[in-house]
Image 1 (cartoon, rainbow, N blue to C red):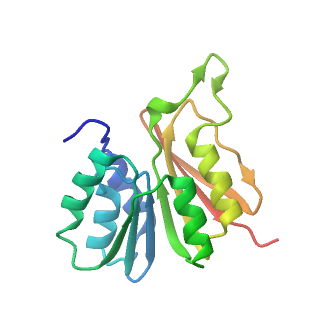
Image 2: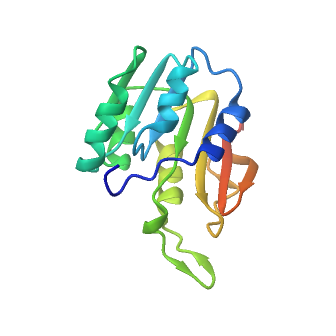
Length: 177
């Protein structure tokens, strides 16, 4: 596997799909896709559409190879996540499930925790602004346990955390206000 790819650990990936249950017919977006392991699992479980967002050139080759086996509808968007979200919003796309697992190595961890502008927080802010989450949709953020994500961010609300060692899965949904 080329450098820069950090496949979601099997334990966390299993947990994601145990949490989600039946996803047949749903639209799935994987941000910071890497090898595409989570999106590939979504496709194998009957997701109607899977979109992968990844912009690292070496990683894109692996992702393209991995997704070539898919028979379901999928798309790879080779852009920075922030630009891809703006594009998807402009196209009027809506997703039932959005999964993001930003690189941990880009975190600025200090004694007081993680820097406010971590990729997870920045991406959540963009997701809230872009409004691409379907009304009953879920955002799942896989992140480092030292990173404290907001409980509320605009219309997005954190409603559950699952901890697996130093990995946390934080689940967000839209609140009707």
